[in-house]
Image (cartoon, rainbow, N blue to C red; front, side, top):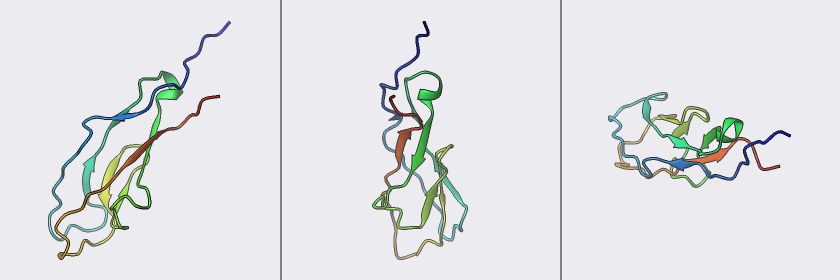
Length: 97
């Protein structure tokens, strides 16, 4: 008999909110911040992936590395916009069987 871990825990961001400052004129590829989420499951069930949903607030100007959680500038930021509120999503790679 093999006992395996169930994928029964949700990934959790810690901290739940992140704040970062991007200098004016930062170009594409500029690293903004790395977000971190953990999953209490074991093994493959603890692997997470990050994404920016369509309505994330990123407006095509930011991207997130799906494996590292690093948020970066992906397009020139207009000087007329002084702040962004961006939602980053995290999900488990493996699903419950």
